[in-house]
Length: 263
Ligand code: 9J3
Ligand code: ZN
Image: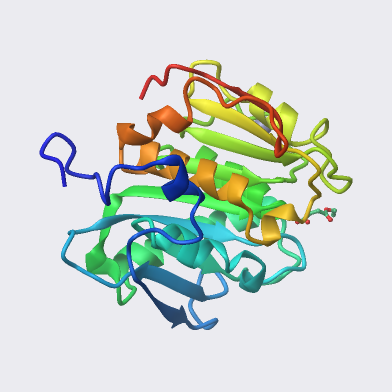
């Protein structure tokens, strides 16, 4: 760990390291019972070693009718880069975005206060992610808890299109071919309504669908890792992947954002 940033974890990143299927940390996992209160249980993925001190943490919610299994690939992918990752089930698969936001926050509280890995977590450095209604819930959680360091809604869905209240650096991920939560009705207004002074970005995946975030995806992974590292760990070594803004490409239909970053 560098003396100038006590939160920095892992080696200096490269394009290959953020695109890789795994980072440098071996990962362990532990299940959390569905009988806990406030959310539906889940799976915690965490770096096995305690030699590098504590880690930031992120809770991840699935979409409408879906389970933690739909988000399982993020567990080892992100934890191996140096985060504690909690993929959750919701109390009911029918829960709406506001409830999913409350459940993400309950999961973070469980993770930092009661879980078996609580001593491995820096409870001041937390983030949220989610798919579809879980992405809508991600915005709800950020709105309700401004101390969160990073938020990433993935093909998010919400009837609330306006998020000027958010103070958490937010990476909005949309899919160009999404017919369930079309970018024109969801991700784009979400991004546009976030404060112009906020560190925010909009990544529109090319040739992608509403369900693209449910399978391993290198573009989602590399920018999610960079966003979490930059804003949960304050790791400016990852700034190079976010600013200047990534160009449109075979996998990126559009990328917008606020550079340079202000936090
Ligand atoms: O979580 C989602 O996949 C939400 C999309 C949806 O079906 O909303 C309509 C009620
Ligand atoms: Zn609103």
